[in-house]
Image 1 (cartoon, rainbow, N blue to C red):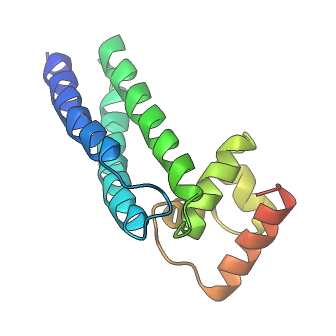
Image 2 (tube, rainbow, N blue to C red; image 1 turned 180 degrees about the vertical axis):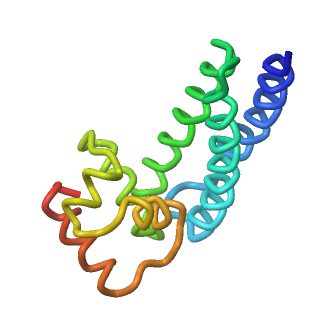
Length: 144
């Protein structure tokens, strides 16, 4: 079936992403955030494709393992990016939400926003000033 092909493509993509992550400058370097954002964008796309593959009735354990690996690498890079001087509100939100063990729905409820909006902000959509204020208030309450 298609699972071995999917897994092979993911392995190839992850080799490139891993090399790019390993080549990132120090988080204090002004170039770090821009370069990390490019990698994060690519990892989000790969994660979306794998999530779709994993929800199909014929998904195999190897596809699920690949999805887990992509999500783990994404989480690790988001955590690193959230500590950089150029960290975005979306990166900070993602890391604090995940560390607090909250879903997007639960977090959105606490901030008076929609989960779709939070997902978009975590994917680097720019919030309005009002949305940003609500998110910052919630982040402060969660210790972020």
